[in-house]
Image (cartoon, rainbow, N blue to C red):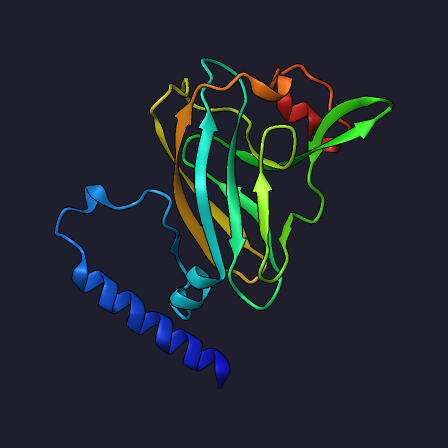
Length: 185
C-alpha cells in the first residue's frame, strides 16, 4: 500500500511539474533520469538520481564516465550493467594489487545503499567505455542507460570534458585480471 501511495504522489508531482515546463525541452537538465519501466516510472526515477555526470574526453581508445549516484529510496539499489550507443560499457573499479592500482570489472555491480550516494570518480568506480565509435571531444553529449537488478532502467546524458587527473591510463593494451581482458586489446 505504501508503494502505491509513493508512486501515486510521485506521478502527481511529475505531472504537475511537466505542466510548468516550457515547450522547448532543450533547456531541460541533461542529467535528469528517464526510466523505461512503465509499471513504476515515478518510483524508479525517485529511487535513483544521477547527479553531475561527465565523460573524460579522449581522441582514441577507452575512456570513462563519472557521476554521483543518489539513492532516494529506503532500499539498496544495485546497478548491474550500463549501455550507450557510443560504446560497449563495463562497470569498473580500481583496486590495490601488489602495490599498484589496477582497474578491473566491478563484480556484483555498483550497490548504492538506502538513502546514500555512490561516487563514480577517477581513481575509483566508473563506467568504462571500451571501444568508443569515434573520438569523444570536449562538449560532446553522450547518452547512457543504467540497468538495475530490479529490471528498471535509468537514462542520463553526460557531457565530455578534458581531464588529466588521477593519472589513469585507459590504454587498450593494459593488463586486467579478468576473463574479459581480451576485450581491451
